[in-house]
Length: 208
Ligand SMILES: O=C(O)CCC(=O)C(=O)O
Ligand SMILES: [Fe+2]
Image 1 (cartoon, rainbow, N blue to C red):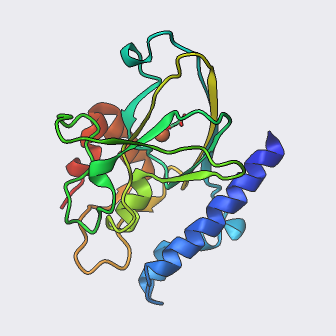
Image 2 (cartoon, helix red, strand yellow):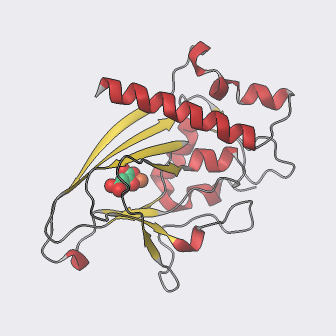
């Protein structure tokens, strides 16, 4: 498990470097803001990480049970390993391709009228990477977080490993390299507090 977590940490940090490069952050003070992300190895504040093992028992009537309710992850990134070939993870389609502030913030409890759930089929040897709320904020919605859920299987138990990667709790999260920031800056601790009280409304509550 320890080796797995080390590998996931290194992968998360490589992915974040690539994603932040894509955001074209100029070499000015904003660079300092993401210094922590670019050079965590030299940082005195380690990232907040957690490996969550999810077990979904089989259910004779899957339509009457939910494995994991719709939500967005609070992390910067979540790296998910699905152990079975069965579908379990689903993402909400109305948010695909969104971001950039042109779409409303994700709300897992929106009326489900036009909502389509798209299965994320496990690919052998492949991992799923979910963008979490904190990366949504830092990228000003250019990397949008995605509402997802897990459904249960009629005959088989399903397992998944979710590795959550976040900055330290006193790290201030704010849109970087954004001409028109859509979100107020907030520490990770503050955001976690807002989400604990307001769940799906957290992103809209820090909207400028
Ligand atoms: O089991 C899955 O596929 C999803 C797990 C998940 O979304 C989570 O742990 O936050
Ligand atoms: Fe999740």
